[in-house]
Length: 379
Image (tube, rainbow, N blue to C red; front, side, top):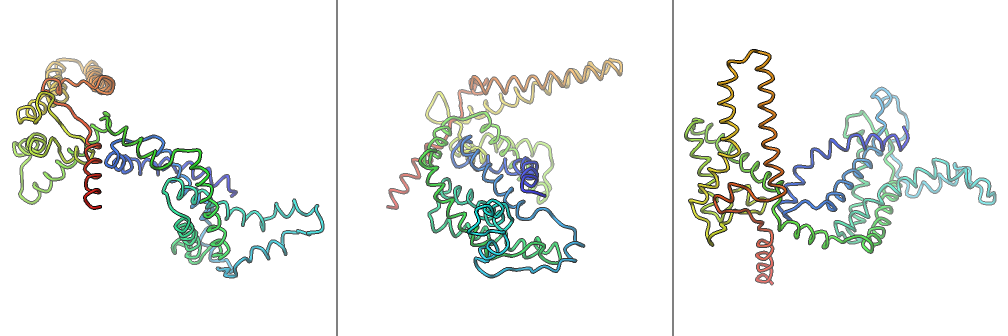
């Protein structure tokens, strides 16, 4: 299996890894900056892809256990700079004969050390350019990454195999660390042409001053997760019944909690947004009642009412007509939610906010001001 084949495998696996990390990444970005800036996402996801590819290049191809048991090759190579001696003795290079140079460059004795040098150059570049690590830290973490790779090989993929199926080579540690060092200077070069970390952060914070529909939706989903989780615990411990107790708990969470805590539920606080009044300085309890009531009547009550009414009518239909009618009904409700979603995304004007005279604003700027004031006090 050549390097290109392994890289293709990494590209195939990467979407699944990206899917797993997307929600945690999005939550972290919204919590810290109030937005998900595409340029930062490009850097982070490309870094994950790079690490995945580097790891696969180290462990693939995977042999069978029988092949590993039959191995009699050395497990370690602990002589520093042995790759130089190996290149001189086995690459076919004759210094006085120019015709041997190309053959020597094509030999494994040259390609493998070069690969180990190149392998960690991106790592050092990422560490310096985006993570803002200095030279000392970049070299240290490059060495630790290389040590992780070598230990992976020495332990036979963490003892899955009875012995290491690849050589633990001290020269790989040296070359990988040198690659990270080169990457540090590549990162310095990138800083001259690409936005630096401070610029990326400032842009993300500027975008975070607006409240997107995605940000609203995630805060709402977080709130429902919290409500369900807490009520589930109460149900187990105190044997709360899912009846009016649940409705009271929901009302207390979505109405009383933001009323008493500066317009924020737990989900809103995490996403750095809050509900404010558009007609007075302070949010009133009646506004929160109306906002919650109109929201659930519009997005839950009306579709539910349509379902109830139609279910009574559909009982008189034949089986075939019933199936088509149910499908059309589901399509209607789906279109209704899609229209509401895009109306919110485009106009930002929502009926339940207009009627309750409330709106959602971002608190990222407020948090930044509070942090700056706290830093001044500490200084």
